[in-house]
Amino acid sequence: MERAVITMHLPAHKRQALRMQTDKRWAELAYDERIPEYIRYLQREAQPHGFRVQTDDRDWGVVLSVDERSHDDKKAAYEWLQTLPDIWNWMP
Image (tube, rainbow, N blue to C red):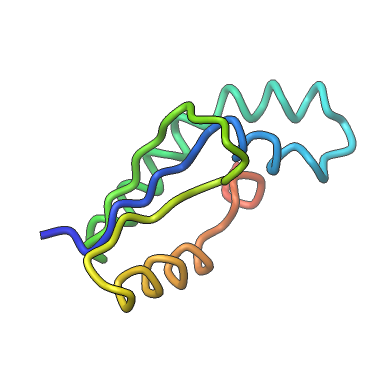
């Protein structure tokens, strides 16, 4: 049974990912090209920890949300996320 479902809200995730990039055009193209593979990476990494990563196109300002069984599972999901590279550090 899953401990938590992590939903990445792609519009807000993209805005946050692009915020610190100086070459916005290149960054947007790179993001759009690589985000599917990055999400698959997160999904593979999540599974052994009892988490599931999914995406949606909701645009309500939040980058991600966590649906969990307990407060401890929610905390564990956020702590796990902090151990992973962001899309720019993951990209070869």
